[in-house]
Length: 482
Image (cartoon, rainbow, N blue to C red; front, side, top):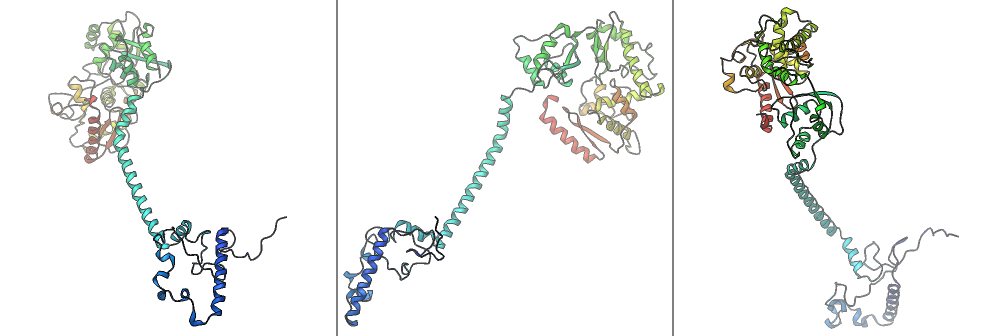
């Protein structure tokens, strides 16, 4: 049966109560012996006269030098070695002159007691704690700084290493759906890789191009249209392009914005019609029903995918494209009298715009510049028109000399108003934008990222200059764009 603790626990010899450690047996015996000696000495002193006290009861400064306490001559005094005087105890059991806190059990001058006395010394504890705390903080800050600097220094090399060790992004499997890809005579592996990425046939340029480079012999691709699928692996796309069954006979794919000279080449490559026959048919405009202002088929060859019957003539094949463009204009609500100006503006928008929503903003910029109240000079300042006039139908960038050439009839830096004719063959979206421009006060735009088509629209020259600076910085990082 458990016993209840006493209400007032008896103090132990160290002066503490409860869980305070008790002295060792040796300490108890020594303390008891000291008390017995003390009692005997007091009894002897009481029996002697007061003026005949023994020498050891005289004041310490009056005792002979050779009778000083042994501790004063001990060379190891205070270090815990040699004999140590036994402590005197008060009547309550505590060491006389000791602080209120309980002493450690065992010998009073043991190593544990010395550590306890040092730990209780407030000045020593505080100094040690403060010095150690500030030192640790400084070390931690220095280490963090070094780690941060190392991370910044290694970020570039680590990224390059990761990119170098990882395989290019690629799809898996043979894909799904139908995608027609046009390969032109003279196309390189790089050209084909770009076309596949643009149509989302393969996931990345590197996935297909690196595969081509890894082939033991260079693959040969025949010009023409090929039936592929969306999101194919690079390996599956390569095998399909080398499979004769995927090549579509008498089929032509014409992307939006393609110039007439390139349309004729594609038609020759996808059919059995000689290029010379197509060029001769295109030079004779009498049988196509074009507007009176037209001097060529430019702008009226609707971009789409066409499959022709065997033995189709060059004129009939071209008229198929022209009739399809008239159908698109009629569907958009363009009156025959407005076909010319609509096609000219749409062809300009088609070459200058990038993302789908930007088509309507680009249209607004050109219409604002045609308004003398907003743009006094009336100069559209389109690089795409200048490039077309130089015969470059694939780029929209120009040089200072080209923009200063007044002999270029398509140079809208020198000649105000719309260009003298269409500069590409526009599709439905560009026609819609020409008819329904967005609302806005923009007078400038620059496509700063040629990979994504992201474009900055501005109202003031300062805003535009900032956009141009961003584009030039991007071009410096992508020298492949020239």
